[in-house]
Amino acid sequence: MAEKRSVAFHTLGCKLNFSETSAISRLMEKEGFVKKNFDEAADVYVINTCSVTDNADKECRQLVRRIQRRAPESMVVITGCYAQLKPKEIAQIPGVDLVLGAAEKFNIAQHLEALTKSDQAKICSCDIEEVSGFNASWSVNDRTRTFLKVQDGCDYSCSFCTIPMARGKSRSDSIQNVLENAKKIASEGVKEIVLTGVNLGDFGKGPDGNKKHEESFYELVRVLDEVEGIERYRISSIEPNLLTNEIIEFVAGSKKFMPHFHIPLQSGSNTLLALMRRRYKRELYADRVQRIKTLMPAASIGVDVIVGFPGETESEFQETFDFLHELEVSYLHVFTYSERPNTVALDIKPVVPVQVRNERNKTLRNLSYMKQQYFQQQFIGQKRKVLFEGHAKNGMMEGYTDNYIRISTPYREEWVNQLVEWSL
Image: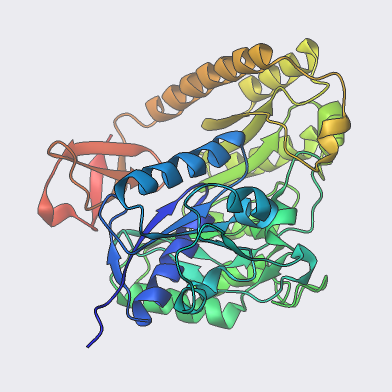
């Protein structure tokens, strides 16, 4: 009897990548592979890459070098966004054996059957325009919370973004399939599902990537709210122009969808929003935040913001700062703009010096810290339910309230994956 081959995975980037790595892992285990930790010896190493920033590219190269030192005879497979965008560049990295683009990442096991170690990496990729179909994915590493992919790709053309080039047209699973997957996840004892996608609010376009919506995100959340066993849902990130009043009102009245939103802003300057090719103005964003806080005063609202975008003047950065300072949001995810190949933003001038970008990043991170502290202090003395996770670190365990306040407390096994009434 042939000895089973082993495989280890490493994921770079977003929640969507984590859900897809889990799905690929399950497919390979069905094909007879034994899963190992990434820091263990394995026959095959799979790196699922991101390419939102330069850092992810560099990290990929570092990981391959680490594998080369530890296990030079092992096969190295690179997939994900970086692999779709720059397959030839990745194929030149010493130690890489197989590069899989967006259409092939779920077929790793089949590609490995005929692959042997050589000096030349094999590339299996195609034009992103040809990518269609939807592969359902969800993470299984944590019994408490699962990231469930319901949508992929993007039809928007933001001037700084490579994701449409890496993931293709907007396409979705069907509501019926998502419902069945949610029931499977519930049967495994998971209490919380985080809905993920590239452009989640655009849910409803079929797997062939046509432009027409067959279903809607609003219809999806209404159906999921009825699934038995799932106690909590979170919407990972949703564009402000797609976060409709009916979605906000539904979440406000739901027992399962948490009062927690993550809404990309990117800039508080309408001039920059236009340069970024975003599909809204700051006034619409402020309206969405106000609507949420009116219906759900305790709601947590996270914001994505980019600093140092080409053409961003000191006064436009100040506009963003002042806008966020006044806005009733809870925390910021601050990204320093980095140049990405084949994006329109490369032609926008003047370029903001890297040192200035970093200073602006620090300024907004400080604002985020103050926002977070202020938000959490509002609830001191209140009781809120916390879903505790199973990881123990230095004798402590963590969990989150419904409105996304992180709680840390000494580990108690009976609290793992349980909703506990907690005094803040």
